[in-house]
Length: 494
Figure 1 (tube, one colour):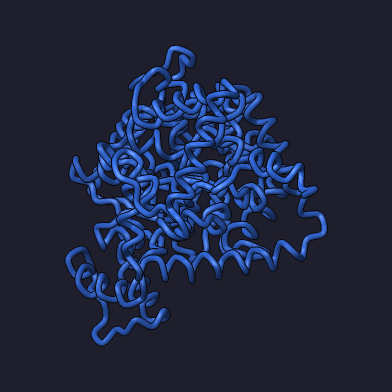
Figure 2 (cartoon, one colour):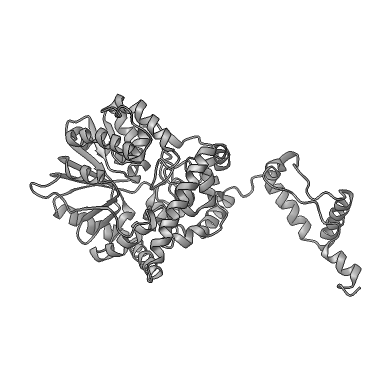
């Protein structure tokens, strides 16, 4: 675990899956070569964004809801310690057991201990970003415990030995034919095989997953979930999902372990009303979420009788200490920013080297993990700064401002380091600092423009600038500067 001198709160460790990943441009270039993935991403993101726009357009008070959501989250972040203690007290009062985890290692150790105490070697899981972030499945597997993902998209990812590429739709990069082959080839090894003659028709694929998962639901003694919201004044946890599989996990097993990021707290039950309008519209483009499950500790004779809640920091207090960056903790994982981002649409989620892809990942990951690696240093630059992410964010996270803030941080961390770019910038600063130098440079440039005749671009530039010119048309210098034109024409009068 590492810390920075200006922020004593610990950073999250980069999990093994992402250690050593190259910087974003390298990953994105590889992804851009996958035409099938780009087609899948374009179709899916455009479909979801259109549905979102339609249902948001129905709301006359949408902007007021956004402001209310942002204000509520800011209130939580400003008094996070108070609300967490209140949440813990209410959870304990309702019969739940609360555990605190400083980092991923501690969280995994707690969960493994709880599962082993039940004497089982398998668990069923509700889709959870927090457990992906701490790589809980991998930690469980290391000690011989199988973790079965029950969300359809997560099941596709798990059976395909793949990684999620979207927060809401983890298998968004997969086509129906690919999913059929994954089911045909992998289901039999871990349970009920795919039905004979299964096609790639969505209904048949969903039925295959339902049959495969049903036996796991019915025999599971332990379930693991996350939570979309944790309400401080009642001790209630809330999970929103679309398939009903999550509800099976949350109600059938005897023991329920919920791994929850500490930023998921809401102050009061009334505050939940705002987010129940913001989240479904922003994520799936629906007016109301299909399956919403809430529980406040165990209920005698109904559902899990052993309820554990693991509250995870894992770098969040480090983010909280940054006055600009802390607004990233408002995020409710709706994915609206991913679906409008031109960079994500083309590069896909794997290029971000994190479980949090897209614009929110570009700001959240470097804050959680720091900017010590090549991938984390490059993420703040994975944006055109078009601002579309802010326009659709239901809690008004100013991602473009955060990106610029993080770019400044990366530059400051490398200030004094000599490379081709810094040398070029120093040369430009030297030239612009003196008018005579600038005029000499302009005369040289215009002479070069005249010598190049009718050419309009320079083409590929050799040496250190080759990477820059490889993706751009570099125009030839003008044959005359504005000052030269002004002098020659007397300000356009002759």
